[in-house]
Image (cartoon, rainbow, N blue to C red; front, side):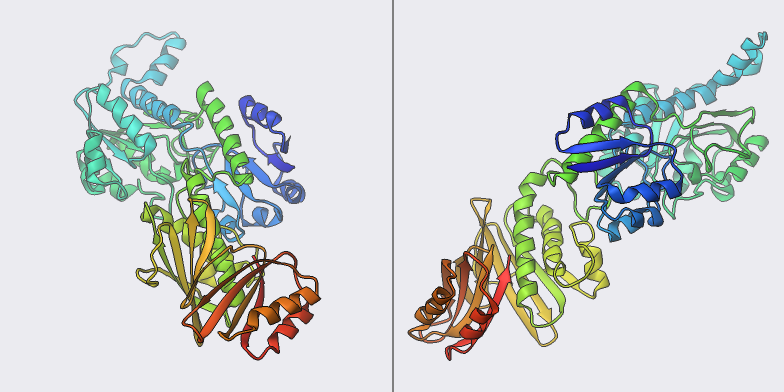
Length: 527
């Protein structure tokens, strides 16, 4: 039974989803201090947060059984993603759930800042009737510059175009082709700042974007520009913006987010040309419902190992096609585990080749599975698909994609060569029928073996009597052979056997096999 802790408020629709889950229970405990959260966290498999809970490295370390942290929302800056990754904890968000609501909030702020909506409302409520004081500007035929052209930025662009605006966008990770598809011109940030009548921020908060709106970038803007921020407060140097608003360089601002929330002491609060709202971007009935149900569905799927969509620290994209990837990842993990068992030293280099359809989508999940298998028996940390690539790098294992490392040709084949000081080994496996794993190559030997259970791996001289001697010893200890698969380099040369056993043999069996003159190597592995 999975135990889930919800430390911030979550919509009723999400709680109802959890009530229906037969394999999970949850506790809703909001308003806890950091110390209280750390005290209870060891008892839970998963944690659901909004923006109030700060899941820093210390908190994550206290969650000794944590497998997933789900952010009911898009931004994950209140979660130490790197610390979670190192501990093998999946961090996921819900970027789709509130994108429409946030885009609409940005448009609302844009309109309100243009037409003095909040200020004129307050004036009229105070008994005044002063129309001339509140002469605004219209959006029609103005240029909007969108900083960050992801999902929300694209929603804003579509709505702005409906108002007759020309839209520019800056996003170094988006191609010009994507911009053309949305009727938007992609430009450099300097050009966007210089040409835009309105600027709306929709980029993620990263070290390189923090305080990107500052005295220098404001100086590059048109006089009388209107600035909107419904993304992250730390994108703006608030002191610099306040000075620009006072001087008139920036005509008005519509702000839903602040560097510190609540924005105590912010120089922007109360300025007459600022419309400010208390982080309402996701605060619609529909968004609250969707964000709650989506994070619960995602978190349960992740705990069950069914899907890992919207995992921000997954080393490969995961989503609706994950079910098709799982057999490849399982095969890769088995090959990695077998490599770990057979290696005669610490593995330092891994080369991977994948043959099959959509190879580009397979290589990263296959690499994650392979590294998980290699590491899980060789280091003390718990290893999973999330932290395997990071742990491999930290343990001095280099990984590369290659071609042509084996001459045999199967569809849906994974080949991996590992190297250690003084040696190397090549393994290859395939998926028969897209789901049945088979080991088809070990170094120069070809065979067709089932890579699971208790397995004896033997190398021997290809001479008469070896099979009989091995069978006799196993029978003496009442160990039954399930399957025996063998490959050899040539008649009378050397052979390799992969023997599936129905039970794990005692050490005495291995000692007895090792003294057979024809056997040059014997290893027992558990897969």
